[in-house]
Length: 120
Figure 1 (spheres, rainbow, N blue to C red):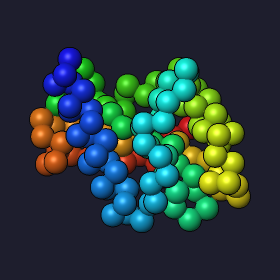
Figure 2 (tube, rainbow, N blue to C red):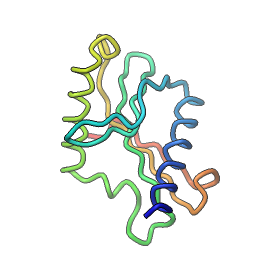
Figure 3 (cartoon, helix red, strand yellow):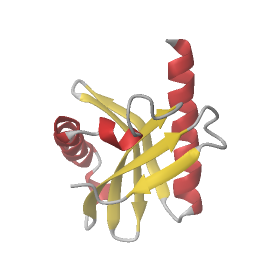
């Protein structure tokens, strides 16, 4: 299990670098409640962005985006609402958005990164 955890952690670090280089400000990482965890909370312009990061060595079990099904999206929206309650000043005046970053490849530093914005 450690190798999977290491891959996921490396993917989140790559996703954070991607977001920063795209003009996002990282507000939180791995924020947890009893209901789950938000990988990354970021802000850019008027958007508050909750980012789910999915890292896969390959697409043998499907594309990383396919892991963010309706139930997962609902849970992420609920976690986003909880984050806003816990951080009202950071969220004030911002539009909430859910993004997914999929990283596919054995080495997260060179793997294919895809950023899907405004998942509904």
